[in-house]
Image 1 (cartoon, rainbow, N blue to C red):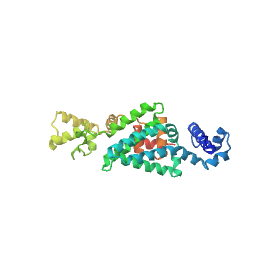
Image 2 (spheres, rainbow, N blue to C red; image 1 turned 90 degrees about the vertical axis):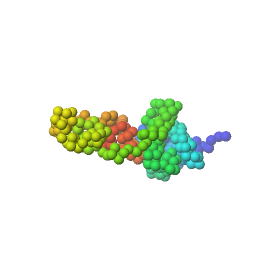
Image 3 (cartoon, rainbow, N blue to C red; image 1 turned 120 degrees about the vertical axis):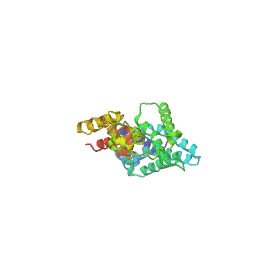
Image 4 (cartoon, helix red, strand yellow; image 1 turned 60 degrees about the vertical axis):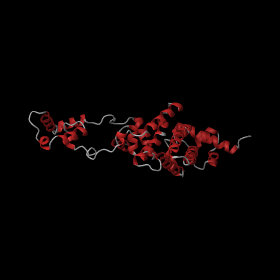
Length: 305
């Protein structure tokens, strides 16, 4: 049985478009270039795809259709089974569409011109609901959103890792994310433990909130306000007073800089942040968490020329 000539031409156009979009980007690829690669006229390309946006939508359609079928299948299952059907199936689908997904990551915002974007939004909401479960609270729903990201984002960022290794790493990560919290970690904090650390205490001799609260709940107020001369608390109070000078306060603030967050982003990270922001698939908070920086750092690079 021979393939229908029209379908064969359409498939060839899609393959050529995918190659050229990956090489030059969607914006810098013209329909004429696609036609020239296939020795077709621009008119012949337009016969199958009336606009370039239709090409992009057609390239993402198999991914969208597979995700919709996955969710339809999981929706009839018990909660726990449905959760892992979605998560494992999501990873497998993302890996199966790895090449177009990597290319479309740069231009996915353009899909919003048609109904494909709205289908993607519905897919994300359905997946979140199935992973969280019908009786989910805020914590479970937050974890569900994080789980979907954990089953998607590494596909784009780790292009040099094999499917087998990346699949194992992604599912291991999401299992750790969704693992039940230990009883002591899940218990609510006492009201006083949840109170914020006063600004003057943060600049004083207490290394953290626990030390400050211990001091303020075990030492009488009069002793805290007027420590005995020559004691360690008296020395700490004098150090705190000295730190109120501009130079000393600056030094204290420098020493207390939050560890683990780089002060700026590299060029590739900036480009990744801008792509995620332009695509509308990540909030500023999500971008900051993914790149390990503060929201202010993300905002600074998003607004820079």
